[in-house]
Image 1 (cartoon, helix red, strand yellow):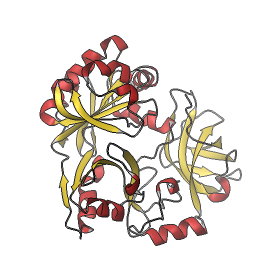
Image 2 (cartoon, helix red, strand yellow):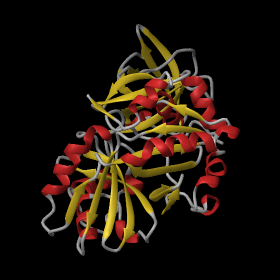
Image 3 (cartoon, helix red, strand yellow):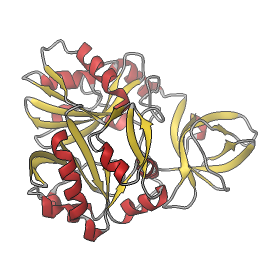
Length: 360
């Protein structure tokens, strides 16, 4: 079991620690609902240092990124980030990622913790362009400072103008007295804020300064359980749930980050899926009757026939009702369609809705 550099800090704060993606991680401190509400209405800080970070550099760096990712990274300007995925050669997804353009010859890529080794080997296997490709994951930590008060709370400890840091842009600056910290207007909660990338040796100091700067704003440390309920309310995919090595990106609703203006791994097959249609589609649903949907529960029609399965589900802290995502046969994917979630032996009525579930 790996430990993040802040492991002892979390234990001292009374966090409940659990194994996650090979790391000992804080799943909650005070409780999921309290932590969820803190981020929705104020500011919270997550330690997500288990995430992976790659550096891709050299004059052919863009060529490699264009080959292995689905989105068009050629449109990126310096200081801009882009959501994308790594398609495999079998019609599925290696991982979903974020690409950061530092300059014309240097890019960073953030990948999911459980896929670090797999992603690195996959990209390296396509590196026929002699691009410098490094795994920086063990040297950098990542904090997500999220919520509507996050930027205001953190402005006093950075020289980066957080007020004008637009969504999916980033700057390198001073943060909590430490140089060369990447400050990025990205996140997984839908409530605004920033993510910062800093060297491991600086992160305990930065964590303490973040809590100090946010004290008058009611900042709290937030665990991974609330991170999951926050992202689910936004309808964001989670690797291993909504997407995996066998998931069609088109079925998963990732057509918006799939650009056929370039050739990339398996682009022809994915294009055929888009043109010909897919048998199942990822949908969001809200329960009409009481119940809590969970991962892998069956989705059935009014006659009890299985038409799909739940990929993620919870009792939404913001909405006070059961919500979830799942794959269903395409004829049931239309907004407003009546479906049922099989919870134990009961078929609980639900309705297909457009995501995000939570609207500000």
